Length: 287
Length: 255
Image 1 (cartoon, each protein chain N blue to C red):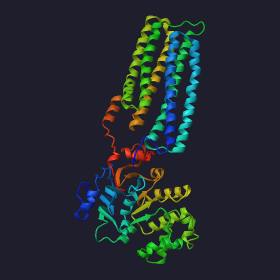
Image 2 (cartoon, rainbow over the protein chains, first blue to last red; image 1 turned 135 degrees about the horizontal axis):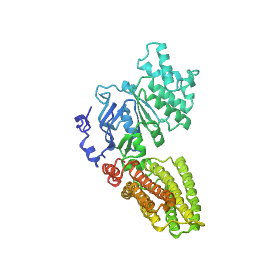
Image 3 (spheres, helix red, strand yellow; image 1 turned 180 degrees about the vertical axis):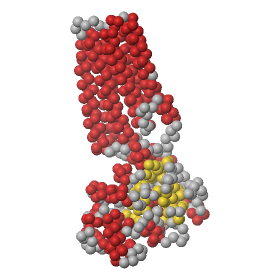
Image 4 (tube, rainbow over the protein chains, first blue to last red; image 1 turned 30 degrees about the vertical axis):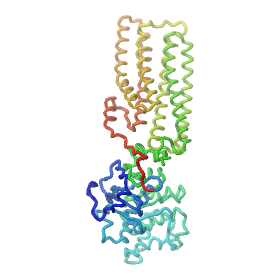
């Protein structure tokens, strides 16, 4: 295990200009950043958008079979941090990520890492359901096909059925597999996107406000699904709903102005947080 | 930009919480006043006033129901978390303790009725002395508890727990003193049971005051201190890390 006190490698050292702009120093995180059985290990992660320092020296473990909720006000960096976990920030020209993020011990920012299989290993579900303009079947089959996970049509059929079953959508779509995915309801579309993410056998699923466009019933179904998926995957969810974070996660991380202010068990964070900023945020005392 | 404030962004939440806290405070002082008046009725041998005190317990019961309704509404509408959640849970528990404390004061007023109404033969002053000693002890506890509640004063609440730890000893030594009255004059036996029940009621009143002090510590410090001695609570509180507070003014952060 990497000690958070270890210096970051030279290639990660920020240039002098950014160091000067980064003052004041990042706030020390309150709470236990380590967990018993980590799948993702993040150490001294910094993200700059041009000159803006969006994530400031964040270190955090994310465990197997754990749902980690990331909360914080808009612009606090939680989505930016989430996008670091499968290198989605690589697509932004002026974004620079430093520090270490290890997935099962492998540095995902190492030079020889291919981001395509990485993004299959670390799947993502977005705020707004975004099914491909293809059939329900093709939405789920696309990933396994391009990653070569199915040797035959029968294999592919099995993967599609298994993924839709795991996403709790099979019973609702089994008779309309060849209808457009975009014709499903919002909640069904989001579960279709989850089925698409799990069809390529990921290890981690990242969810960026997955229920913000859904009604309460569809939200409840997705939350139930998150709970079931936890048995097989590591899930990291960004949410603006405190109640949702409290309902679905085992650990919660609170971000504020790019700092990871506090991380702890969800039970502790929502009943007796240690940091005043965490308490002010979750009790709605931010002005 | 200031990021933290003591007030909720939704200020209506503050006023609703304050309203409940004010009602609880009112209920607490009503219960305390009931105890003082019931002791005065015993002292003044005023059975009529004792009846008025017993009737006035309805005010406490009404407040109990009213506050519970407001707490239900607050939970349903605001879905409180962290300190707010602890505050609302603590308020509900304080109310339950105050309602029971109010019931105990009725028992003291009942002694006045039993001893001084009609053609009864009241006990002598010495045998009642221990009731007033015990009452002073628990009155002191309840006053301190209500002050700790009003000011979220953990130190004061721990002091009440310390008094609470001594309550059982007070009760037992009172029983011992009462026994001597029986040994001296067997005619006192008739009063003995009533007075013991009165002292037990005062003991229970003190236990409710102690419970309220525990709820104050839960609310202010987030620690559940039920079933712990005052020393253990002090040890627990001393061992807590200081609250981490980021100075918002010192943090420019990214734009």
